[in-house]
Length: 148
Image (spheres, one colour):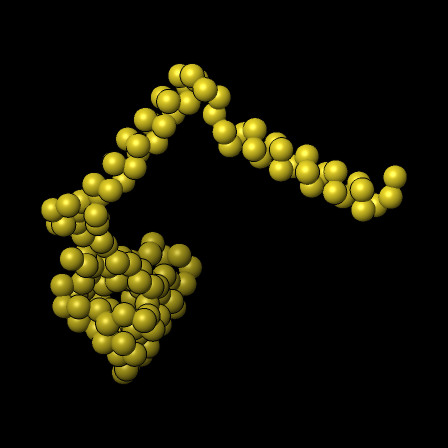
C-alpha cells in the first residue's frame, strides 16, 4: 500500500465515524429526551441577561492592589504612602485596606483602613501612630468597592 491510499482510507473512515455519531437512529427515545434537555438549558441561559438577571440589580465588587511604602516625612513621624498604580480611579466610597509589617515581627502586623478617593497615579499618606510604628519597614495595600 502506498501512503496516498493509507491517508485516503483513514480520512474516509473518520468521516464515516462522524456521520454515525451525528445522526440519531429512528425511534430512539433517548435522543428525543436529550434534545429536550438541550432546549431546557437553552431557555434557562436566555433568561439570564446580566449579573442580576432580567431585573438588573446585580453588582460586582472590584478589588485592586495598590503600591505601599513606609516613609519618614520628619523625625518620629512614620507614614504609609499608598499610591494608586492600578488602571482604575478609586471612588470616594471605596475601602482602602493596608497592612504594616515591622522589624523583629513585633508588634504583629498592623491592619488599618481608610476610604477613597484616590486618582490614578495619586498618593495618599497615612500617618502611623500605633504601638511599634517606629519599627515599621514595609506595607501592602488594596482597595475594594462595589460597581453598580
